[in-house]
Image 1 (cartoon, rainbow, N blue to C red):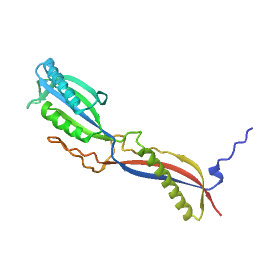
Image 2: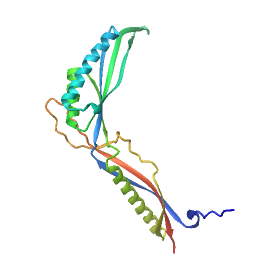
Image 3: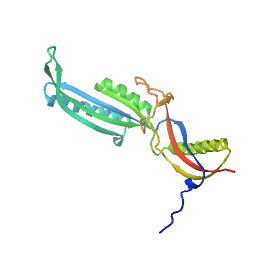
Image 4: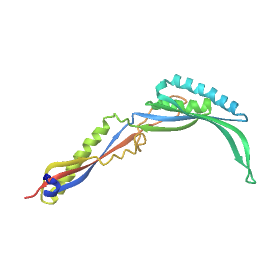
Length: 222
């Protein structure tokens, strides 16, 4: 029979707390979705219209300096388009073709110019921008450090209130970070960006990066 060592948490008093930190930072980049649609009687004509305007969109992205690696066709559809009649029936309006392209950029001015020119020249629908803080941004690690420090401060406060001293660290675990999520952090402030003439003004704001950590310390009781 093998004797297992006792669980240290069952033999000594401990304190467990959750540390939290919130760091504000400007986003690294944004995602924008550009959708082109056309309604025609024949599906081929609708698709040809969208195809021609898609070439114009790619030319516009080239002009704005958006690399091919930062843009992607996310969907192409061709389907019948129906409308309801007053008597509850349906009537065929034609065939609708659509194509969507996602664009990634870090330049608010490029976003503003793309929104303006794509809607004016290509009758595009725009969704976004959706701002993101990249996973390799050091702010994530800074938030983690601050959360751990906050956990220690909280544990020390509890220990002092209980008339004890904070001892060694027993356990540290990450309960899951509430990022609001990567790419969807809430906008909490605004940093102005200069807009080129005939361009939609765009502001990237500051985003709040949050981190949490559970920490358990031993308590030294006299």
